Image 1 (cartoon, rainbow, N blue to C red):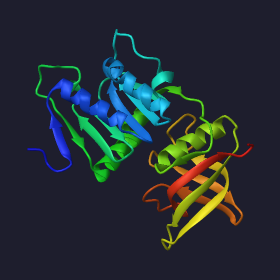
Image 2: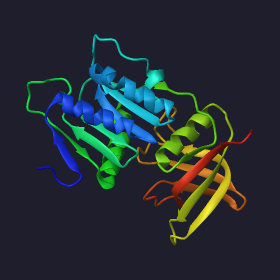
Image 3: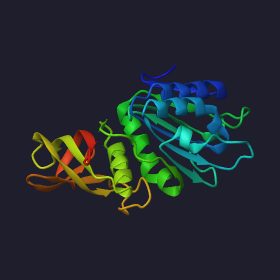
Length: 248
């Protein structure tokens, strides 16, 4: 019997359907770690997510002789790992996800399984593991050019990625963010030019700490640092942020 918010799958078709459903239901972000041989299985759903302006991080591992879809059609960024040491891992909007043994997608005769979860705490843990461990082990193969502005994010990590792409391309951007002080938990709104990004999501990395993702914003009261959920070193914890192109 499935626990509340959890469902376990033991067959390849059931796992494929669950992964496709998660990608189809994403409004803001998708992370996906799969064998390279299985990537084509999810290409239509990933392509549709990109068309919905969902930010998609794809990590593929292993080798395959089969053709693979063009990365620029299916992802915001792609990294690859030569050997299949990464679990099957999916998150959608950092709210839902699926994890399991990668062979559930590649072998039909083994006792492998995957579990889907509809739990924000579990999704956040898997999302953090994806970015902080598996993503850093990969080699960057593709990164999309920065999209049009304005863009609004509740998942701060993806605001950091977009800001990093913009500054890398020398596109000036400003931010308006709903934030909470990490000192006294008061809520406020800050606005100003984004002058620095600390991250290791895309090359060139500006931080050697895989958990560090922050923005520095030049406000009327001076420069302030903004981090994501659970931030302690930064001045503010971000709840929602909108990025604008400064030269529009």
